[in-house]
Image (cartoon, rainbow, N blue to C red; front, top):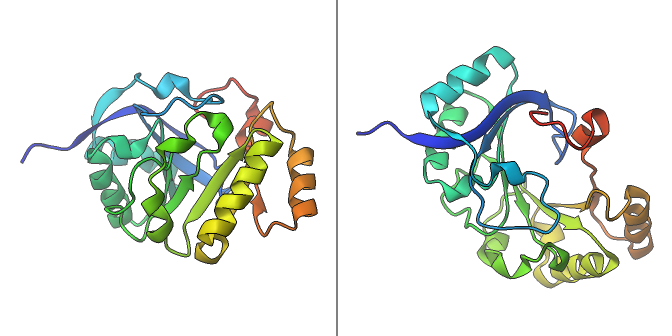
Length: 216
């Protein structure tokens, strides 16, 4: 059988800036390609740039980082079939593995042990009609739904989706301010006023290294 290869944009060792694993030293594996074009995207360089890399080569590259956490992000990891083999290999290597996915692909085939951080695209992203809504019924308790909020309209839409689909009962819901469009303080005020049972998250890596640094 041919060796599985995935187009990889970058591999790096950094502090996890988002999700419930924020603050953890993590091996990041950023895949190439994305089928969406969110208005506020901050990783446009991953749309196409990358190098075909085998799963074995990826494991070898992250080994020197000596961390138990591995995050597969993008781009959109699930746009490449080889990502499933990578996720399984990371589990076999005894990493705690998270998958950051844009929400437009089904997570049906993703191993249950993977911590899936699933974007639910709000209207201001321009991609809210592309979601794989079946994912609402496929999550485990350790998974997380993430809403990037770029306006009050986005916030109200996110609230409606959460209540309509009972997301708070399924797993943790994260609200994140779209960088430069909504301030953390503003989003915090909306959450408190609405008494929303969500977790506010910010992009810690941008606070540490700034907005333009790659490989962090």
